[in-house]
Image (tube, rainbow, N blue to C red; front, side):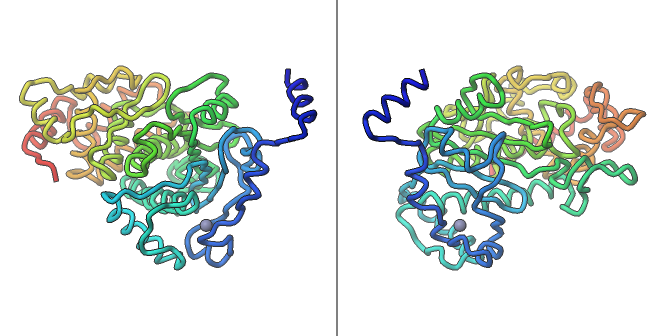
Length: 393
Ligand SMILES: [Zn+2]
């Protein structure tokens, strides 16, 4: 079938190799101009070529039926994007201007005010904010880059197997303008069809990737896309911490992802489905008020029950509000103890020194007792007292 298709194309005299024509349109970033010094100052390691998933970024145009692919590598993350140029709505002007102001500090050619963001400027802003978020997440963990070894060290505390929070390779974020492109890309390494965003650990190379289809009407706008990226990055970063060798507790993983997403945009709420992640457009606007209402009605969940949940699909709406609020409580009231809890959960080794998270409920009980001197029930009481008097900031 493929041979026949090629014959027809040649006979018609229009031999179109997907991607190549588009690629020649513009290979050079108009903002940092692929100038090594400008790029270094802006925290850009490269605009490609670079590894992306199972391929090199140079393979993307010929393998994925999208528009132009552009790539950007920062200190900790590689991005590939086929997102188009977008108009900046009037309501978005102030937010975008503030972001451009931050980018201009390191990339002087960035304009003060724009009506449209071209694909390069969009990606530069996403990359800048993602690196800022990397720092934010490291502050939650209470770590810096200096805490992580190139490869696993057997002396000193266990910190994983590489300098990217415990993984050997940089994180990868692939942003698809079209879902068909996301489907083809993810099928290449998962072998199955996924609908929503997909997160993946490449075991042989020790790297974590997220592939995001950005063609839902809200995800076409950066106001909603970026918090969704942050939700996914939170999962990647937490899973990667001290190397991804076993799944962390679902309630904590999800609670942190929602907490980080809502720090970026309080109205955003990514809901995880069985086939990947999607954005939920019917979430209540004010989760703080929702949690107070839930507690008043006695509908909140107990941590002793959440500890046993292994799949995100098993978290109903009240469980999600509880996970988010518990994460906020720990972040705001007990940041140092939270860092110890996260480190303890991700750093379990068996007596031979292999990572082992087989008794996750037992590990959580032990850590709650050791770090906070709380039983799960005592914890619930502390959190409820805090949550029922919170008001949205
Ligand atoms: Zn650039």
